[in-house]
Image (cartoon, rainbow, N blue to C red; front, side, top):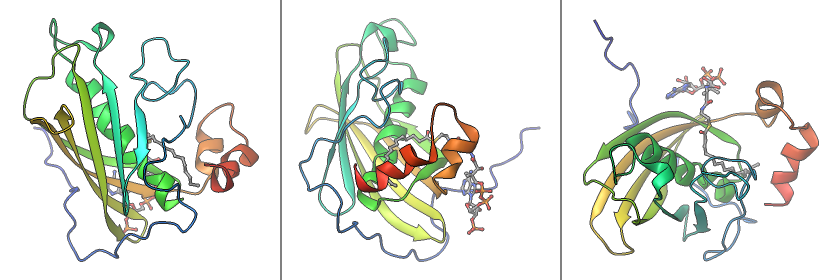
Length: 184
Ligand SMILES: CCCCCCCCCCCCCCCC(=O)SCCNC(=O)CCNC(=O)[C@H](O)C(C)(C)COP(=O)(O)OP(=O)(O)OC[C@H]1O[C@@H](n2cnc3c(N)ncnc32)[C@H](O)[C@@H]1OP(=O)(O)O
C-alpha cells in the first residue's frame, strides 16, 4: 500500500508575512544563473532549460524558457518532470529576494494543459510567507505571457545554512556560498 502524504504544501496555520530583503535585486532585474551547469538555468548545460528569471514586485519572480526537443516526454510534448523542474527553479529563485538559502522540501504540481515543443512557457512564483524555517510559495505556468494556465504548483522550501551545499555537494566552498549573500 502506498502511504498517504504526511506533509502538505498548504499552510496549516497563519504564516509570518514574507519580507523582501532591503538589498534584493530591484523589480525588473534579470537574475544571473546561480550555477553555470544547473540543468534549469545554467548556460553551460548542453540540454538544460536555460530558464531566465527576473525579479518581480514584492516577493515574486517571473521566469521563461522555450521547450525544445530535448525536453520531450511524449513526441512533441514537454515531459511533466521537466515542467516540474521549471516550476522548482522559478520558486527557488525567490531566494534571491529573501536572501536566504533554501532547498525544496515539497513540490505539488497540477498539470492543466499539455505543453508542446516550441512553446515559450511563462512562469511566475510568489512567496506566501514563513512558518519557522518553512517557506510556502505558489507558482503558475502559462502558454504565453497572458496565455492559458498550463501548470500550477504549491511548494514548501526549507531554509538551510549555507554549509548545506558545502557538506552535501561538490565544488562549493563556504566562501563561494557566502558570496551569494553579498553578490547576487
Ligand atoms: C544567501 C541567499 C542568496 C541565495 C541566492 C541563490 C539563489 C539560488 C536559486 C536556486 C534555484 C534552484 C531551486 C532548486 C531547489 C532545489 O531543487 S533543492 C534540491 C532538492 N531538495 C533537496 O535536496 C532537499 C533534501 N532534503 C534535505 O536536505 C532535508 O530533508 C531538509 C529539507 C534540509 C530538512 O532537513 P533538516 O534541515 O534536518 O530540517 P528538519 O529539522 O527535518 O525540518 C525543518 C522544518 O522543515 C520542515 N520540513 C522538512 N522537510 C520537509 C519537507 N520535505 N516538506 C515540508 N516540510 C519539511 C520540518 O517539518 C520542520 O518544520 P518545523 O518542525 O521546524 O516547523
